[in-house]
Length: 338
Image (tube, rainbow, N blue to C red; front, side, top):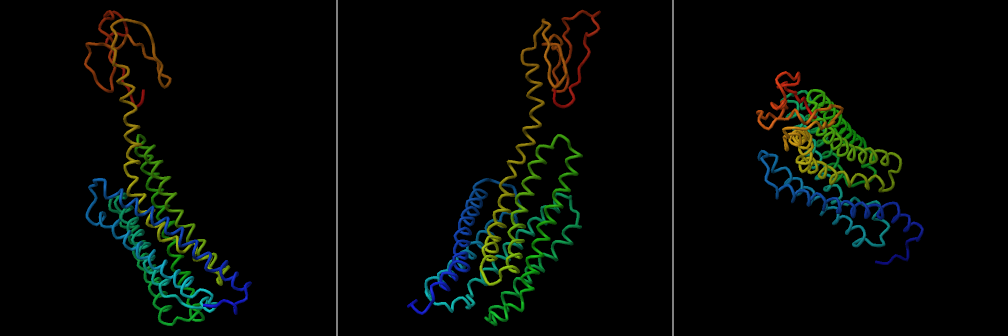
C-alpha cells in the first residue's frame, strides 16, 4: 500500500494517539496474561481441597483470557499490517476488538461471582451481599453484550457515539462492585480482628491483599471512564480498558494462591507462645537464682521444676524450695505470649 497521499502530520498523529497507544496496551496486556498463566499453573500444581466449581474457575479464566488476547492481537495485526498506510482505517469498526471486549466481560463476571462466593462463605452464609452483587453482575454482563452486539450490527462510528451510555453504565457497575467487595471484606475482617485477637497478623495480611487487588481494577476502570469522556477520539481509554480483563484474572488468582501465605501469619503468631514457653522449660534447673524478663514479666528460673508436670500454659515452682518458702508450689499461669 502506498502512503504518499497521507500527510505525515496526520499519519503521525493517528499513530501516536490511536494505534501506538493500542499497541502498547496489547503488549502490556500480554505480559499480564503471562502472569495469569503462571498463577494458574501454580494453583494446579499445588494440592487443594477446593470444591469442583472453584477448581474449574482458574481454567475458565485462563481460557477466556487467552481468547481475549488472541482477538486483540488479530485486531492489531489487521489495523497495523493489513491496513498499513490507510488513513480510513481510523474510522473502521474492527470486529475483533468488540468481540474481545465480550470475553473481557466474562472475566469480570467470573471475578465478581468469585468475590461474592468468598464473602458469602466468610459471612457464614449471609445472603445480604449476594442479593446485591449477583443482579448487578448480571446487569454488567448484559450491558457488555448489548454494546458489542449493537456495534457489530451497525458498524457505524456515528451510531457508536449514540450508545456510549452503555459503556458508562458497564464500567460504573464494575466500579461499584469492586468498591463494594473491598469495603464488605474489610468490614468483615475488621469484625473478626476484634473477636479473635490472636489472628490479628493474619487479618492484617488478608486486609492489605484485598485492598491492593480490588483497588487496582477499580483504578483502571475509573481511568477508562475518564478518558472516554475527555479524549473520545483517541485510544487512551482503550489502554486502560484492555488491561481490566487480565487484572481481574490476576486478582482472582492472587487471592486463591495467597491463602497459604495468609495462613502462615496465624501459624507464626500461634507458635510464638509455645516457642518461648519451650525455651523456659528446656533446661529446667534445680537450683539457681537467675531471673529472666520477657514482655515486662520477671520469672525466676528456680521456679521451674524438672519433676513438676509440664503444661504448655503453666510453670510450677521447684520442689527443691522449702515448704516454708512462700513461693513453694505456686503455679504461674502464662496467659498468651510470655
